[in-house]
Length: 231
Image 1 (cartoon, rainbow, N blue to C red):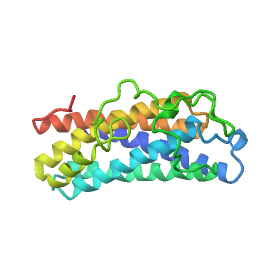
Image 2: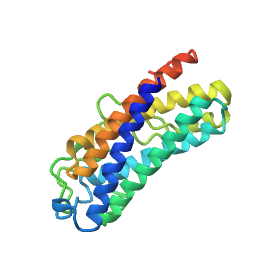
Image 3: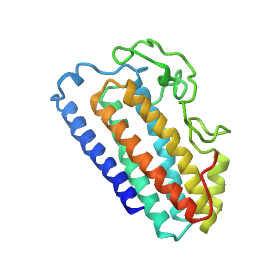
Image 4: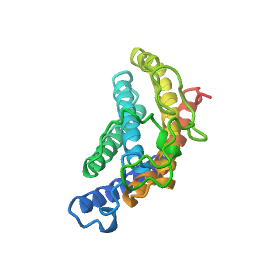
């Protein structure tokens, strides 16, 4: 388990370091061709940044909830690391939107619609923007009230997590975060394929590798508690 967790952490650290360097380079005007190819508002680059920022925010929220609901050191450590990593990545994604002078919220763009776009990395047009996109292949998770993207927990599930304690809280958190990571991996894979900004593609690929490692870790932690992932 420790080797799996170390691999997840290492992948995140490398992606974060690369993304920070690339962001600073772009902001200082030394980012080469990236600055000349500013993504459009409906591009996969912008859509992923907006949607993953929202997706990450819920992971941070769930992680802080469970830290107050259990004394299990393994779960608390995992929750802290997920919250810290995803809060930092969220800051980078929102920072890119600021650098690109793009809005953080698009009222006319349904969540995940960028997954169906192609060739829209530059300019301000919709391009192949296609409205509601199908959930990413292989994603799982909640689809009820409050679950606006694949893998996100519903309001009711967040309420249950906040009311649970001890082992029940640990199991529910691990199950919800497993769903959350599966949805996040599908989204990050989409950006790794479609995004045109090299630093963003690298960050997305780092998310894929780190969250896949954490999925293995969480499956082991659930097994230790006599439980299993949902679905």
